Length: 148
Image 1 (cartoon, rainbow, N blue to C red):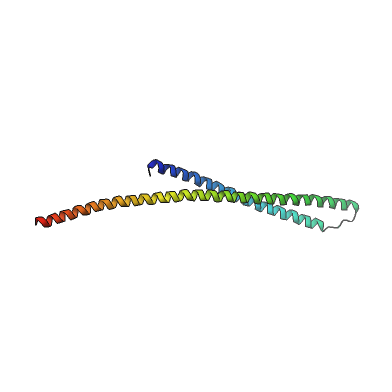
Image 2 (cartoon, helix red, strand yellow):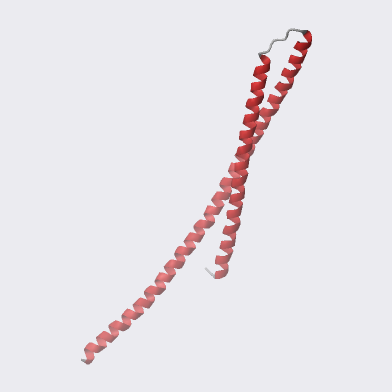
């Protein structure tokens, strides 16, 4: 692998790492949004349950209670829709993060393979040098035996 190829792979790895981090940040934000939506829904349902337990003693109080219950009912419906939407967004964010994580891991594996190939090539070069030295020593040693 040439130096230019190595630099290109390193650049791709940096970009993938940034994308993976961005996706993870997006996922964390989406999960916080789900939690906030759940809390909002629980609070609205609690207010609705609280208000539905009240008794109206006059017609005006009955109308006010009914209007309050209708308004809270709409609020609960909106909160449920918001929770469903935030859950869908979280699922999508998780999918994006997983895809980006896989892409990053693929590049990291290529880099690891490249490093292993480089180490193997260096080991072969070192072995070649050592073989050459051993051959020369053997040749000198044999020559010394013949001369003596």
